[in-house]
Image (cartoon, rainbow, N blue to C red):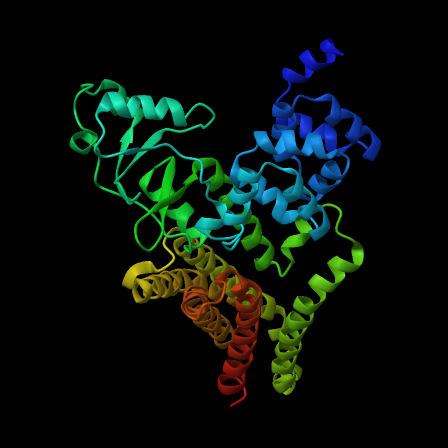
Length: 427
């Protein structure tokens, strides 16, 4: 048994979690009851959310108490929030009262806010202390906490400044903390969206950011490991929304019917746009009957317009992710993308004109196809920037605009090519 524990200690908790996820219920129960609480808690944190409840169900009350004793308050809160009501009540009943109070406090905040991802475990010192007194306080608070920043507060626990551990250790033992602390504060309210918190930490290259209430009282901190999880979660969510897929489908055990229910509405919406595009073609069916060769160029104009909108959308979404408000630069971003599409469209339309002329030996037809492609690309570039910015301003997720923009581009491209042909070739 001791030899097995020694082997387990050499394996990273994330790798052990992968092994646990492959075990059946009885094997998990036996394995976790074998582990020391500190190792069990690390493995539980790394285990997938959908497997955590199964693990906890296999633990007795005493083991749950010991495991949650080792967990940080934010990790413990994340786990409890994902449990069924019955299992969550059981966990809260058997854990230490202080741990229960911390978890219940954090659960008051929305999951995707700074309060929802913060930890109340931090190191703080009073600004009136000397450096020597502060070092003693840090040693007392920081024994079981991983930290890089010491927060400085006043008698009312209002955040007044920060200190690095290096500053504190190298300071004259008699100097007051208020004389050496950094007062250039960066903090966030608990209601701030977690994506905005991650953006701030990335922008200012900080490993943690304090969370303060409306009175400036320090209530917690968001750490860099939380930010990594936030960025992964948000990236997955955005990718799924762009494809019209429910984010729950990232869970491997989601059933077939759940996937069908989540995807079918989006496919139906896209089908509506496709029917609209087909109706546009139907409006000009007589044009196609007289100039059948136009059918060959429909996918050319629509395809290059779609590619242009995709480029513009990708760049705009990235700007929105890095700087959600764009701070008065919305008009400039839209103008930039439209201008780029206009100039690219000029080059591409000339190439299309040349190819169309070589194929059909008809300069009017080649000119129509080229002009349709140019206008289509310009409008596509404009829409790829304008629509996500508009959705963001209206409070909607801009990533959902992806498929809508592509379908709109197809409709516009068909209308331009067939409409110009009706006017110039048959008019």
